[in-house]
Image 1 (cartoon, rainbow, N blue to C red):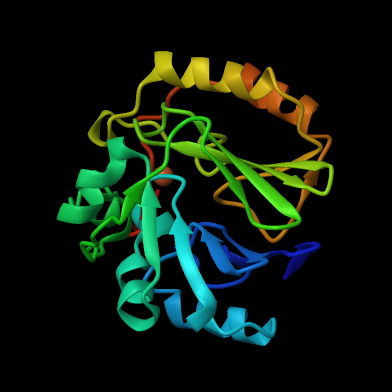
Image 2 (cartoon, rainbow, N blue to C red):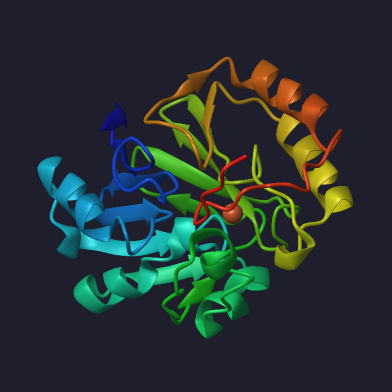
Length: 239
Ligand SMILES: [Fe+2]
């Protein structure tokens, strides 16, 4: 689905498999770039979505991951094997992806799946800037959900668009290295900037407007109450 000029959403609960986090395709001046890439469960559907938008997956040069979780970058090895895409992550989340850590990637604990280990080609860090042509991108390191979580701040011809991954509305668990103190600072970092619109990891195909107010509201709700009875995606229960 086209979100704006040269920016498309290709994955998410309403576009691929229910396990898939949102993923975005940038049509750069020299090729295609993915921001997150979904799960192996949704991989074929995501590839089909990319083709139906008129693009050839062979032109995907790189995947930039918001963090090293199954629902966000679990399919990276498939893209790499089929199309030779390079994978970039923040250094704090590299090890779990390269080793296929079934807990830290959430693959087993949330989804009952196996994370396909994937070599990471390079790291991205706070302040890194990318020029895709009409779209410019800055990496914001926003640890909290995981230590290697990042957000992508896109400048789409003057429209400031935040791709927040799981830094907004993501889950908290000591099993995945979540850190409340760092997360609060990361939320301050986001609310100290201006964004026209934003999106996050588990939402439909959408650009959420009025971003500054919504991010402030999200921050107000942060960590007031933890639910220890969280139900993993893989589980069904009779309550
Ligand atoms: Fe996550």
